[in-house]
Structure formats: structure tokens, C-alpha cells
Length: 139
Image 1 (cartoon, rainbow, N blue to C red):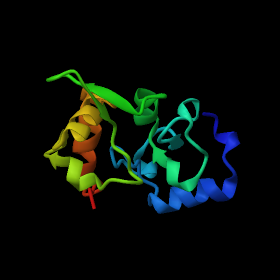
Image 2 (cartoon, helix red, strand yellow):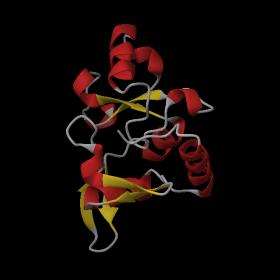
Image 3 (cartoon, helix red, strand yellow):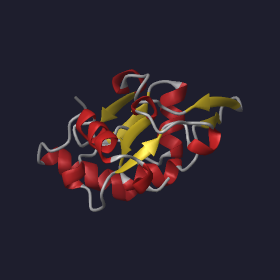
């Protein structure tokens, strides 16, 4: 969804609440080449509202891979699994950082890691560099 549809006050609330980090992969805005975007967790086309309860800060990579999805298929049993919802779930319960790789701990975590492509080569390299310089943190 285009950013102009989100009131500036609400946009700032989302950015500040997220501490300027992508709420999916946790990369900070200042270490990202492109500006982070406001994501509708449940997309508008599926009835999601432009409200603080349904908005998350997302880096360009996560937002592009997520698109209008809010669920994926668990490849082990073909079950529909919701994606991680930063408003309702805690990151550390669904993911862990293993060196520079983000691992899914639950079906939700695994599905989100796969669909949002957290561990592509470029994203791993970027995370490794930030970790080496103590600029990437999961807390």
C-alpha cells in the first residue's frame, strides 16, 4: 500500500514503536540502503485496517517478499500457517539468530523465514557485517 495513505502521526508512532527496526528481520533503518516502509500486517485487500494494531515497520526486502500475504503453506504437511505478527507475537518465541542466520523455531517462524527470504546470500552477508561491528541486535 502506498505510504501516502497513512497519516504522518500514525507513521511516526509505528516507526518509534519499532525503534526504527524492521519488525520482521530486525535490521535498523540506518543500516538499510532503502527507507523502511509501513506494512499492513493483514493487507487492506483482505480487510486489514490502517490502524496502529495492524501496522508494522518493514524493510524493503521483507515488505516486497511479504506483499499481500499474511499466511503461507507449511511444506512438511501442506497446512496453512499464518506469518509472524509483530503486534500479537514475540520475535524471540518464533525466531533465533544463529550466527547471522535467522532460524524459525515454530511453524510460524519457519514459514515467515522462508516466505520473507530472511537468509538469502546478500541478507546474510549484510547481517554478518553488522554483527561483526556490534550493530545488529535481537533485543
